Image (cartoon, rainbow, N blue to C red; front, side, top):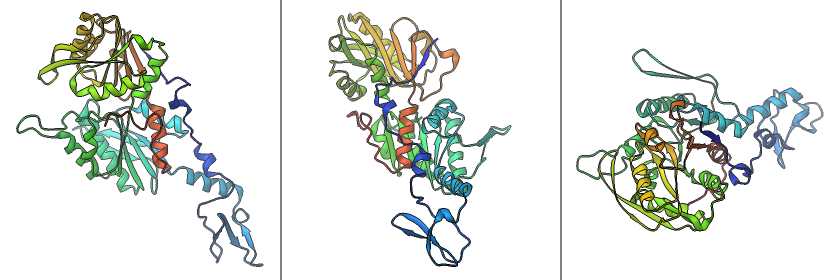
Length: 398
């Protein structure tokens, strides 16, 4: 049975500085407006909220007008401006993110009518709140995408201040350009749908290609899951002289090069393949030397595992001692499981951006969590901080 592995304590994903919501809001001076039934309004003096005593006219602190319970209620209301809701696509990841932030998931009702139509109702107020909707558009892609759009619309009509679509896995990302005549660019279409439904921002993890960010007319925060995988590989204590990073195709060279640079500037190899159709790959040859080395194959997703399994077979033919497969998104369409568990790989390392059913686990599989990475990014977006989190700020990929 595969294990769910959290990043090790030595990795910055765990040690990122995060001040709790309650602690930030309950600082020495109350810095948000308070209501009072007195005739004269409150004023702000050097950051302290004060009011006037109705009889003496003296300036007194706001706490004199409010009982302790009312002050605590006001502080609590100010700290609940961050709301996280989960769709049905990956509720376990959303729960991990909310735990990292010290919050509870927002209450939401999602159901489907007999004819398949999706119904969404928020079970709590989001008026004036920064709302984050966690919903990857993984299989079934159309169902999960439509659910995300309806969730965004529900938040918009409930007067949310901002709506951020947290999409750990962005479906339709492979249809990002025209390679033949009369093809659609579905990635742009999906971006338009998310924007027009009312989203103010998108948070995505490891987009298939960097240009997909340009398809959105709203800000996009693009984070990478590779640092989580890099940290896990560091715990394996493999000698840097034995490592070689392999790109399973020419299109992933930039990603593999950035990965290799973080692994003590390991050498790079490239698998040259020619694709005759969708989900059909034919490996031709290998560029680079892997003889006697531990090969780390890096890709952004594994779908049917045709490309990466044929690449692994070629690496073994060329003399690789061990082969590891590393990917952020485990789509795992049939017959991916049979290919990955056939003995070609020493270990298959993935993240939990896409939920994995129990039947798809196999002994060589290791699942890492990206909840801390996404949770920290959500907090920084909400707190208007820079999203440049070292070492997550860039991998030199885009």
